[in-house]
Amino acid sequence: MGWLLAWGRGGFGRVIVFRLAGAGWDVIAGARDTDKARNLVADAAERGLALRTVQLDVACGASCRRALQECTEMTGGGPWALVNNAGIPQAGAIADVDDQQARRLLEVNLLGPARLCRLVLPAMAAHGGGRIVNISSGLGRVPWPMGAWYSAGKHALSALTHCLRVEAAHLGVRVSLVEPGAFATPMLSRALTDLDTLGDPANPGYESTTRLFTAVDRRVPGPEPVARTVEACLTARRPRPRYVVGRDARFLIPLHTLLPLTLTDRLKHTITGLPRTPAAATPPQREPGEVPGRVKETA
Image 1: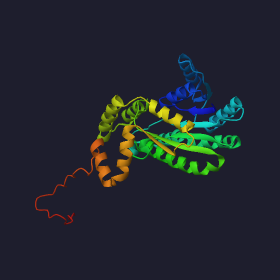
Image 2 (image 1 turned 60 degrees about the vertical axis):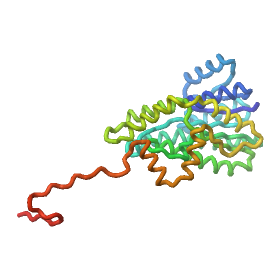
Image 3 (image 1 turned 180 degrees about the vertical axis):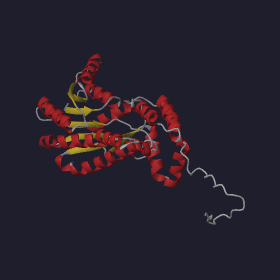
């Protein structure tokens, strides 16, 4: 099978590269540093799989260009397929996430995948076609309080993918979007760390969201269905534009689309514990005999 460049920060990315390598793909996995690359190759070898790696920090333009140049040399022309799997959550209230944290998320979850898509397109066009798979999230279509930046980045990645699918069609490049629900990956534990770091005792959303994420993390299935879906994107004669993976995502996405925002807002308030109305203000104290609304005269 053809050459494929896949990257990720664990979780989905790890399972995807192992499944594709096992299916006969010549997988080149992007890893952020040499230690992670070495461990990935060793784990693959224990499973009887062979894969190659390139060092790749998707938040760095120079690193992306070097990785693609190395990949081009390794394959004699560049990859036939690209799988983008972004992976940092940055949970917390919008009021508590600063500019630096927001920019970091957008670099990893949005600008990095967009940059890699741009870099691989010329080689794919020269080959006469190729495949690009961008992994978004069900939360890109169901924006969730206390995780707004993650939802925003994934929503933007979805929009970018839909536009790229139209723009790259004449090059013979087919572009698919995968929207997973909740699966057992390090993502939720990282989100819990974010909540603990930013937690504001005055905001009840932190405590309720921590309980929610902890409960979800104990019940979610393994990420293998996402890896199978990525393989389908690469092998289908006519891959679908969008794949929704997971029972929770297949239920929540259409529900959120059909229900009015006033109702979905109520549900989110209830689940996150965020209050719907301001706390009752304490009325100002008046002196005996003072008439409400009258300006008190002073000497």
